Image (tube, rainbow, N blue to C red; front, top):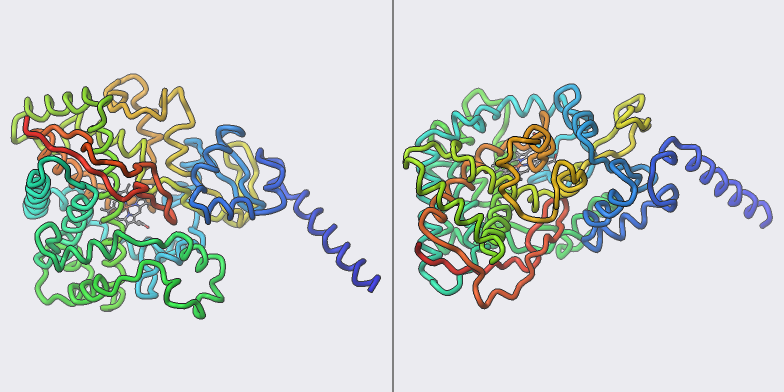
Length: 468
Ligand code: HEM
């Protein structure tokens, strides 16, 4: 028995010595993060990881230890090193295995750089601005924006834009990928059910269980499957086998005759882009319209109206500076993916922001903090103020710290599509209507964390539309 106690004591002592001698102990952070990751896990399971980390940054500065093997950073130097060094930055962690589709790796869920860049080469041209701005894509987006407005004005006193913005985002992204087979969830009940399936789910804790207990995952009951989506799967599998997709659609490129991807890989890639394109654009627009509709922000809405109505109707959508400022400010305040994008420090370790960090340590930056921590760059960081983007002074620094789409070779592929969709919709709405918060709006619009993304807590945003 004594030997057992001695061995146990020795093992505990060795554990403490190893932890205390790690270079990570020199990084600022609460004492308990040297010994355990349980506090971080607790905040993850209670949907509070982002705010917990943000609070640590406010107390300890731009580099903070959040677990024995995990560091969060928030400076420009760290962003460049982790996400853009050598083009694509460091390799992703196994968290991204959660984002496999049909059990297959996609571009987003590929962990290593090499295989990622091969996949990216197959599809990158589809997301180039020159392709997105093709008349067939823009007119399809404008058609969906008009369908959105019709839905909203039909119920003059109060309309839940959260629902219709998700339909708009879904119709936009599926049209881009599968044209002429894109969804019309703004008009069709059957397609609307696909939007519901993708939008209303409780999957944070289920995803975390799969991440932390992968070996047990095959034994989990079906109620622990995150985001069950049979209708979406059927649609994506059918569309990925389409015989004559439009020449400029994503599926036409991925499923072309000499494509290295088989049908299942094409379907997995498309389902991933569909999922990536609905919540992000839908939630981003929802937070934006909510902010513009608040009484204290009327002046921003009026300034946007002035720009949109004074501009020549043929002005290209990306040449309206205040519209751009409004979108950027909304994505700064409530980035649709606000949480850490975790990466492994490569072999040999790296020096980041003046701290040596050993190999295999998990490092990350989270947009929510990057957009708020440096108050010289973003004064009054919690206030929604699009005007800050119109000031030439400090513009370069603000743009460099704009991190909503991440950066480097693994930054958002759909950025151009998302920006065009958001701007086309806003031009359609705010050149003709004033929006205010509806009287019956009771639900909470706080950011609610999901696995890396977020959504408004009440998943409801009731606004009133009135003609100008
Ligand atoms: C406002 C809207 C959007 C935001 C804020 C956003 C943000 C992001 C971010 C931050 C990442 C990197 C995440 C990480 O490294 O963990 C990402 C990746 C990605 N996004 Fe978006 N996204 C948006 C819309 C879209 C749309 C509309 C699509 C496609 C239709 C899309 C497709 C992708 C893809 C495929 C990746 C993976 C890129 C890669 O691994 O190379 N996103 N997005």
